[in-house]
Image 1: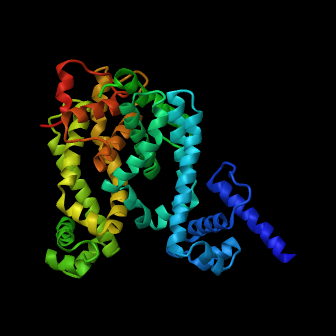
Image 2: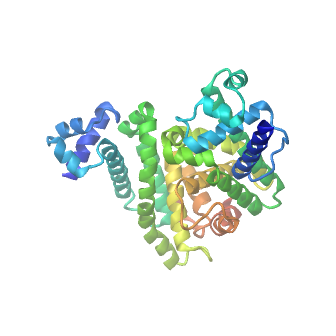
Image 3: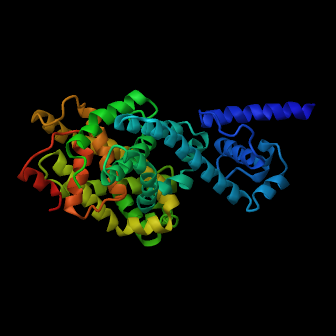
Length: 220
Length: 200
């Protein structure tokens, strides 16, 4: 009976955490063993950071044995961390994609995409812990040549959606611009723009950016 | 004295990297005692390294403002700054060297310095934004403060990584400036626009 209570409590905590990290209903109702381990790892990273998170912590948080973690991830901690990063990126992009696909105008698409991305980054517990306490683990990904790679990925992701409203070249350039806006305003908070607030994002998009596309958007 | 210590620390970084730049090595290079270095950097090595990065970031920004001194308006100064910064960063030997060998030591500190650089870039751009407003070229409804903050961020992000743009090509620089600033100021016509190449 005790274990049922613990299981209930654990599931509750997982749900709370998952909701905090991803404020939209998870697609899969019952998490597989693997997902459970990854969710647990995410909770541990948010709480203790990357360096201090051990597989024992992850196993305890997931309510499974250490052997079970190793069976699911034979590569150990590195494999778990890599899988967490991959899963979180997939969650992030699919959530943003849902918003992009649902937008009816270029303005709405830009506003929804920027706000969704900005909000998810700002409220991501594990990411915040890393940026605050272990910046060396994450910030080098956003500098110079490596930022070029991030921009290329984001451009490939968002450009097809923008192409509903813009020619191909402009769509790619605007997609890249949007990725830069997210990174800049997320990395260095601004008194002028709050990406977690759609009204504030709309002000930026409508006031400063869209008029440029109306006059000279499709020139090469 | 602070500058002398920072110059010495910078020389150490360029010679042997950030991990090996100690208080001791810096003191030797500057020809001062360890106690003197600690007087200016009581936080020790960590504070010294943060100081060096700040120092070089600001010195770089100073070189850039010198390079774009002839710029006449906001489009012009943005294009010229981007062209200069992207070229000068690529040619910055010490930066590229440390970025390859010790990115985990360097990048978080550049990130912190950028936080301090942003208001400086904003201040640098503010008179250009004000001049556009005075000339009636600012688009209706544009808030000058929002605009200055936005342009500063855009300048930094495109200088950091050019992405799909070739900032060595004046035509592309012009297209980029038009994309990023076209919403802030009215499009110019004729020869003036051609001067916005930003390369001189």
